Length: 105
Image 1 (cartoon, one colour):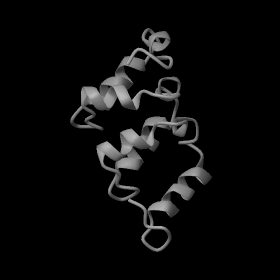
Image 2: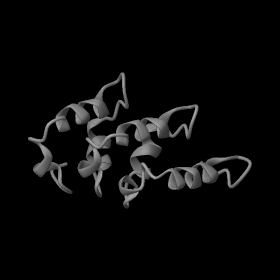
Image 3: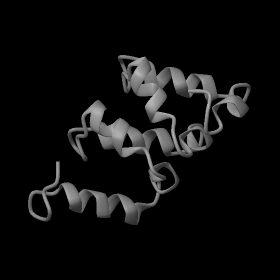
């Protein structure tokens, strides 16, 4: 958990609140194990950026991509955090999930 920038962000304003939101059952509800995996490859650096948590929530929303918690945690690795607020990237991801397009799940 204390990798990829987490240690350097621990005292930043809002960082711990954002981590709590990731764990909250009323929000994303990540388990401890899922949180450790989720905080990879740039997530820590984006966690307090305007729009980042909203974009993560959209990935989970049944009205958008509807990713399960397990899918979300896997999806966020390998640099996705740096692209998550890019509208073109999200549209391409939606195309991957769309049953009318590639239908990947």
